Image (cartoon, rainbow, N blue to C red):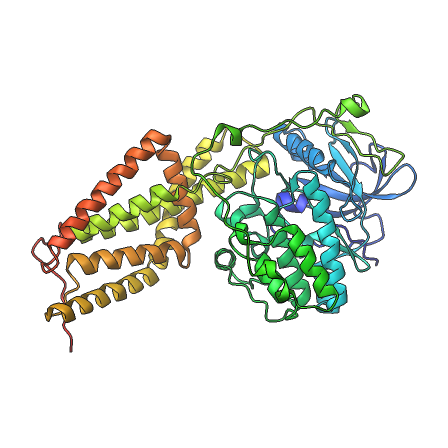
Length: 566
């Protein structure tokens, strides 16, 4: 047995959330059953596969080993699948670096669409760490510099990799080679699909991908820091466990760097900041890495103490953010290439033209790159608090129903994105969505009932504290069932639901509902104004009924909840 290791440059990113084993035997038992050649390449053995394609080790006309990815037979004639492959080619061809697996050849329009990349005879970083243990300072600095070089080449091409993790880094000796552009994102075209939310490895998905915010180069530097943290400690920086738990740690910035060299820890802490605008710039990261390599402490770098100011964001997209410059026409420099094919040049330093005559826009995940609608949601929360002050039962019921609806929406959208991502749009999509929607609703209701316990407890404690303080000021008994304690309790409970455990689906779903229902600036202003009016009425009612019991309609308008001090 030998261990020919090479990761599929797209299959894993497109078809699953984990790295596939790629240790193969040296016999021909794994050869493709129906043929021994594809195009000009002789197939040797299968070395990986994913939902979209199968990767083979192959030999070119000169007998050199290459990695050949071919679309699966059952989707080879699917137009969407072919277009996704064309998009991947258009992405890979723009990157030329010894630290990135190079695209060598591609056939998109033939009977067996495929692409060919250089074969990297190295083990994945996670395998190396598991075998050799955590990296020392010298080896770690070399890894960081190599990955930085790869990211520099990727970013100069206007691309964000989005899936930098140990499984996508192959080690050739002590030098890394970055692979897997299966979910790469072209930075100057946010209309392209973005499925890293559910298709990547949870502990290495940046907070902005999880939250559906704008993806930038800072996303890759977050992945760079997470990957180095793993190599330095031998442990995933955000731990292991169920996906929602790990993603929640990512969004909160709850990393564990206890096993990382203390001299490097400040740099990784800065780069792992959940707020992308607060992460150090690439030049600052490299300066700190050089300082670490020279034996210094990255905490001594002033830029890590004074982060960049938060970027200005707007809930409203302007025409300039919706317009993108087209890719340069490759025929201006190279002449028109044969249809559907990229010919590998004899000179390896010569850039390869793109096969795509234009850009393909696959079925988008509607949550990615959209505005967060924070102002509208804040106004709705204020209105909910006002309603609770007047009618606590109604306010609490609306809060629970909203949580169920938001999770229901998030589950349904995620399910449809996964379906269209793996198989492309189909006529049965509407039927499947209708059939599975009730099941998603059941899951959303159960999830809400489980996750509401902690917010209810914290909100109850807040209400009791307010009631206690008011009783001490007024020298009266402690009543929870008054407008002020109830309003404060529901407000605190809602905030804990939003930011606490299980809050990620609630936030995504809430934003999706608001974006889908409250469209356009005029309607947004009307909704915010109406919510503000409700909140104002509730505040006036609260201030004028500080000592009276709350109305518990429709249960009993004369009842109130009392808590007597012992």
